[in-house]
Length: 452
Image (cartoon, rainbow, N blue to C red; front, side):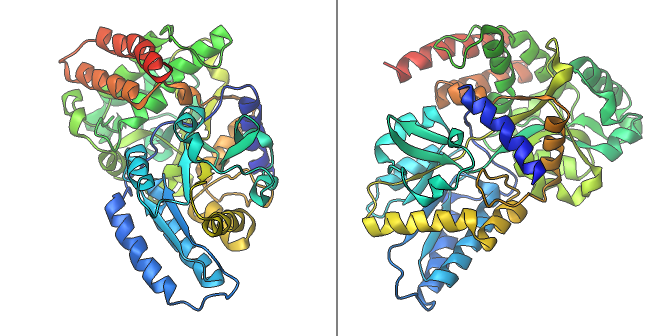
């Protein structure tokens, strides 16, 4: 399983260096509200309760899922497991950008989730007292590397379960119609040249360079978290560090130039971005209104109607020396935690469910084929997601994957401050100095608040 191994090795090396862990809110056009998912799950649970139960089955599972785009697949997998074992599995999916809020609400209930997730060390700090020690568990033993586990002292309290990559998803057919191929874009200068040429011929071509950089909550995480990762990554790399209490903003001019390109060479006027959603961006891309769409391998189901042969993926270039050797941004922001306040029966049922997900034919097939996941477990199947194949190609070609450093962002409030400043700048009601202030001064303030 060469393709899976190449990207797993890249992640292992990054995590070993202490630079990689996940962060932010992942979402897509298929995002459903927690209320809708709860209703669907309750309905499923009722029908599952009527299924013939295994007399040896005990306990139940309640999974609070972080990824809205995989809600349907998780509901189906839960149903399959219940049919096989008789163990009730309820999956509730938090709305886009609302996971932490939903988790706090659900954990306060008497029937709290038995399975939840954190986005890395920063997220773990808030929930470590609720995390069951997974040391000695079968699922921990099935990890391909202990680099994918998060510890609290000697206890293993969270396990990474999916490796993902993001960049600029590209409609190769439209790019070729404009007279270019992905091989023509190896740097920010190349990307700027192509984008500005497309913009100059926008009416003639019938499409724009970029989809709308929506700053609605269903979309803003792509820029206040995922795009903001690039200047953080390069600053950390230059300074030889893995985190900081005071970001310097060394590469914020680079952040500005890629943001400027996104908002000026796109499908809409920058003043409209505050109300543009993730759904808008997907519709524009699938509707062949734009060549480039910043998102990740998890978004494949949203864009697959374009046809696999038409899909490409480019690194996000921001104009840093040596970026021609850059690959995609690769990492994980998804770590499973088992609630240690659950009953012994529910804890064991949850551990059994997780092990089945990553070892059984039904589980590994669903995670690879339906969810498009690369999972770091010994019995994992190669994903059929072509965007993952592209990510693997970059690794195989010797390109350096960009670490997911955004797990070190000091708080959600910091991200919101940066997002608001980006929106104001795009609308013309604020200047870039406001973005710099939110990024640098906001970081120091929020770090101090979070760390006493």
